[in-house]
Length: 61
Image (cartoon, rainbow, N blue to C red; front, side, top):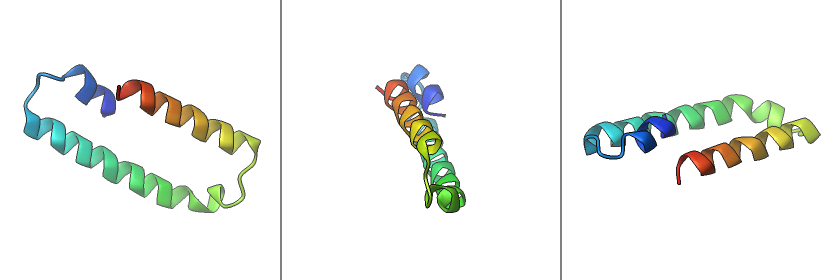
């Protein structure tokens, strides 16, 4: 959804704000669902988190 907002920068503000809130809610639910797996992280989990953060950073610049 961050890519949709990024690529549609001249779109209506209300739609972009709604997409941002939906994405934030989805990320919050995903984080809560993954907490048991993140409690005992291994090298793979740390790598996936770093890659995910990098993708979000690049997509939302």
